[in-house]
Length: 73
Image (cartoon, rainbow, N blue to C red; front, side, top):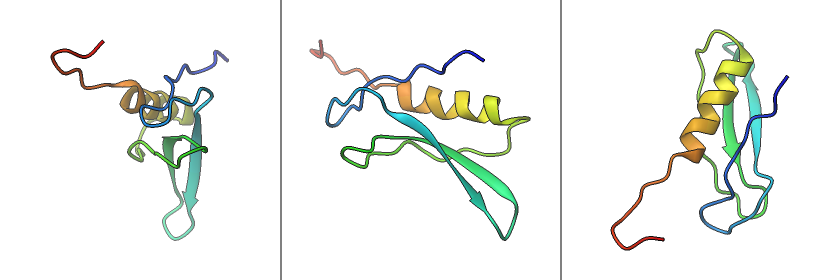
C-alpha cells in the first residue's frame, strides 16, 4: 500500500505529521484526522468513506490544502 503524503505542519513546521484514527464505541464509526504531535494541530475529522484508505486520503487532502494569500511565498 502506498504511503499517504502529508505536508509539514502549517503552524510549527514539523515534518512527519500522521493520520490518526479514533473509533467511537457508541456508534462504531471510525474517525480519521491528520495530526501534528509536536504542537497538537489537527485537521478536520472525516468519516463515512467506503474504506479506511479513502478516509485517510480525505483527511490528508484536508490537511494538505493550504490557503494562499497574495504575497505568500
